[in-house]
Length: 534
Image 1 (cartoon, rainbow, N blue to C red):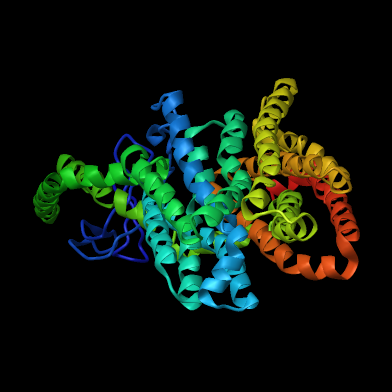
Image 2 (spheres, rainbow, N blue to C red):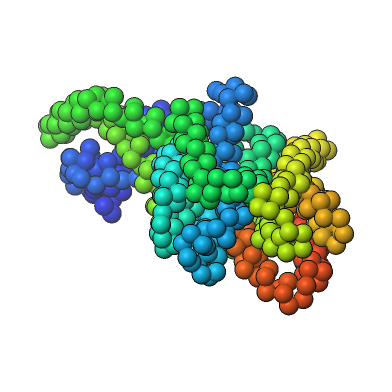
């Protein structure tokens, strides 16, 4: 078969291999053909990229890992995801001592909390982009090192300015798993299994803000606030140890890229030899043409030599250049404006903000009304942690069950067409939050707030990941950004709001907003399939 040519450009060639319908990537450094003049140009510098179908299934590790190994990987990722929310709240009971130690103003101390939370929302936009270009493992390792170094710096710092800067870097290191973790779950689990995996992974984000004040209260009262950061250093070091020795690369796209690069390295000598042989065959063919005949065997060998040697040369390179870094980095921002992402994350973002509203105001309220000590204030967060854990676990189970039940009744057996069924458990959380926010029993209230947040979170995040599986890290970073905006703003608003209208009316407003957020879920359940396919 003769090569397919482009007459408009003599240096751009796409060659079709004999007995094959695939288009291969052919560098014009191998050949360039102009059929009008039979002019042949060899060994130029440019490369012609002809797209071909990309099948990542052979490189996926879903079927290559045992169930226990998969869950251990999710545990490692969840542990790193746990560090972000844990570090945001663990020293809240020690804020007064930190202020006295640095002789800082209230504004500066509040900046150590708000800057951390806002950075926790922004950083995943970068980490998600890096993970899609360089892999999950590289991102986890880099983030763990940054977190460890900055946390040690926080423990040793002696000025409020340095402390704030190190808190920002600590947040950068702690933020990676918030976005990349969803991509790891997509790499390891099929669509009907992700609810449980997402529930375990998101458990860290839910119980971190709750367990933080408990640990922080005890450590601050008996050891001092600096030991809070030494504890975080120990947890960060343990996480880094697990990542280094037990966390493999899970991205099928990155594994394919590495496999092609390895194959290219081993075939370099063969490729050079093939180029030389192709050049010799071409010269023989040219001689035959000039003598008035055509050597078909030499011509066919020439064509096959170009196609087969060229494909191995450029396959790995074409993969890495198919999507520009700039295009990838703005992908999460684009997701923030998609109706499905906005509406699916609205109830969760609001619920997460409500939880931080309570977390930020609880120490002052309990110390002012009940004269509780630092560790007693920390213990009051325990009920919320129990509620969060129960909500995340149960909603993951119910989410998978709802999807599987809908899929069984669907004659077409198309799980992607029924993804909106995952959102059904969110109604339990939306109903629970406004009821308990008006409750008069504190510990029942706080435990059920956690339960409500857990029920809202897991189905929401699993749904958007299933909707955009090929961009799971980017879509989760967009959702994380919306969540952290809410969580960062409510602690700033809470003191002024409570001072102006009191606890009762503040909780009433939150309860009303929680009920109204149900309209988002109702809209997605009716129009989500259409929006996802636009």
